[in-house]
Image (cartoon, rainbow, N blue to C red; front, side, top):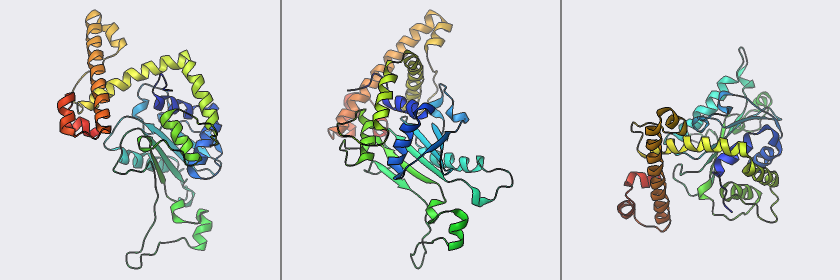
Amino acid sequence: MRNTIRFDWAIKRLLRNKANFSILEGFLSELLGEDIIIESILESESNKESLDNKMNRVDVLVQDSKGELIIIEVQSNYTHDYLMRMLFGSSKLVVDNMAEGMVYSKIKKIISVNIVYFNLGHGDDYIYHGFTNFIGIHTKNKLSLSDQEKKVFNAEHIERIYPEYYIIKINNFDNISRNTLDEWINFLKNEEVKDGSTAKGLLEAKKELDKLKLSKEAMHEYEADLIYWRDNQSLMSTKFLEGELSGIDKGIRMGEEGKEKYAAEKAQQKAKEKQIEIAKSMLEDAMSIPKIAKLTGLSEDEIKVL
């Protein structure tokens, strides 16, 4: 069953809701392989509910029972510099959470969890984990913490000090759940909970998503967000050429001429989305990019982004 709203938007709202601690705790526990208890969802500029929330660097920022900071970002829009955006987000958290005069050993651990609905990098896995290690140039052995450093940092290994990154490439998941974490990935991709699923927080997530579908307030917010998302997609697909964001409010201000322009742009965007859907199907059938470009009218560069 497909949702009537974009699922990446819905799951972003779910995970950001403070009332859904058990859902977020369940997802993070399955991903990190340990029981996560969330102490608080931290307020920041990027947690605000606004039309530009798709462009913010953090969707959810939480602090667990050990004081570690965890970034969770749900991103569907393609961006060529997303990997550096991840680095910026974790680096800024380190700086923002250093009080004046604080010793370096008290710097909080950062875990960056990125749920992306587009092709990021080149790799056929659907979950990637990155962390920092130091390897000897000559001996090839891994640098480890001394006994004293273990006490200072309250960690057994160097990688537990520096930021860690998780990248979940939703579109690469093959729809086969091999473990409880896969049950969550399947839910994030297909919006379904299979019989017998036991992943922590998953059943609660499904129940809350069903409620969200029926909420008029949420639907109004979604529709406003969708208008912004489509405008942004249009700008990106034309390689950021100059253009105007159209919308209902603008149409009202500009009168009938504005309404006609909005309708024309909306029709053009729908046609573009149809071309993209057809191109995606052709890519799945292993059709060549030049041939797809000829049949759909899309440029080869646009098709490569897909």
